[in-house]
Image: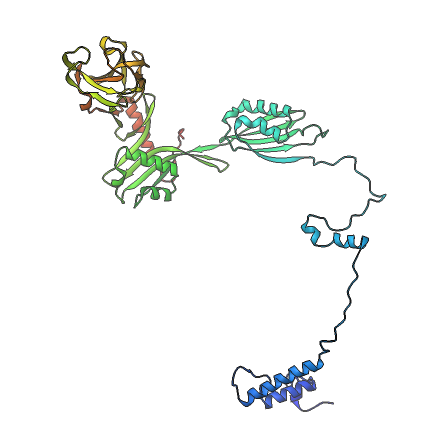
Amino acid sequence: MRSDDSSGMIGGAGAGVLAPAPQVFTAKFRRRFSDFDVMPDLGSRIGTLTWYRGAATCIGLCALTLLLAPGFENPIYGTVPPKMTGAEFDATRAQSILPLGQGATTGYRVAASKLVAPLTDTPERPMINLDVKLASGDALLGALQRSGVGKGDASAIGALITKAVALGDIQPGTMLDLTLGRRVDKSQPRPLEKLALRARFDLKLEVARNGGGLSLKEIPIAIDRTPLRIQGTIGSSLYRSARAAGAPAKAVEAYIKTLASRVPVSRLGSGCKFDIIIGQARAETGEVQLGNLMYAGVSGCANNVQMLPWEADGKTSWYDGAGKGETTGMMGMPANGRFSSGFGMRRHPILGYTRMHKGIDIAAAYGSPVYAAADGTVQIAGRSSGYGNLIKISHGGGNGSGYGHLSRIYVRPGQIVRKGQQIGAVGNTGLSTGPHLHYEWYRNGVAINPRSVSFSSTKQLTGGDLGQFRAKLGAMLAVPVGHGLETDDD
């Protein structure tokens, strides 16, 4: 039977579905008593009629709950499963969580049936691939044998690789890519099928088994050796600016050290521009190696600098754009000690009369090293009357030095010596009252006070060396920033 009262339908007159009677009653009650609160908040409006009605409702509900309770003296009975024993307990325990924490396995272990055939031998993988990191080239054979390669194959591999590159030249940390094949007997090592390694930056080697023997394949790697040029503004810190521009830390340190030999780095203005060129090698496989500093320059300010390394007289030094090298000065003290006697007229401690003392005496322990005061050529190295064991060195330009009373002589006449090189040892030979060094300096054959000498020399390239140097400098200056110039130098 259809009702014309749309309020008894869910969704209104258009829904056409009759709602249950309780829902209809609830809807009517809420519309009529919209302000009626069934369960008011007992924490607010205390003492009002609404609060008392809520308190009565709460007490009534609590009383109803107590009336429906079975009572504290009447327990509620339930079923408890019996304790498991025997096989049932073992099966349940094997599948529980506790044994997992103690390292046990889970699940049933079924005994083998007649359908299971036992294996006569444990199967092996036919091929094994290994990556081995080499400690040093000399340890190649040991690394191969520890990886499972037989002694015979390891020796053959070493002999093959030695034909291409010395084992000692292989860099530590080189990775070995090994492939070991199937072996006939487990008591024997696996045969080597393939070995690959990067022997040098420009060379890759592969050793492979062909038939019954091993063969070596050399794979050259194309290298683009072009120096890298980096420029930028010095700013507040030369080091930080150069590092931010991409220059390696070691190259920046070498650059600053080179500049410091010509100009005070602290006086370079923040607007000056640094110019760094370093060696670079790029492999076709993508690896990059950075080499040594090749050019150091400063531009855009009063202290412009152009520095380039150049080998002259068997020694590599830095020269500026005009071909001038480093300035070297005379060593102040050829021996470590104290001045015991000065230059000039004095009463001789042994002869007993006054005469000219042509040098200075430096008291030092017997056997202490004696160094050359400057670069030069040895003229005398031997016994010389009252001087005892004497060394005389010619330094060019009319300058010369002498070292007397030595206990030992380590140079010979005609030998070229360098500043700071040990040439002898302090002694007590000749007319001497104790171990000391008698040190003299001559200028145009006349003895002068060594402590008054201010001697320095600056190397200068001339002739063909200067022309080649300027050509190399021009090539360096032509290198674009971030690019390079084809060169053989690293």
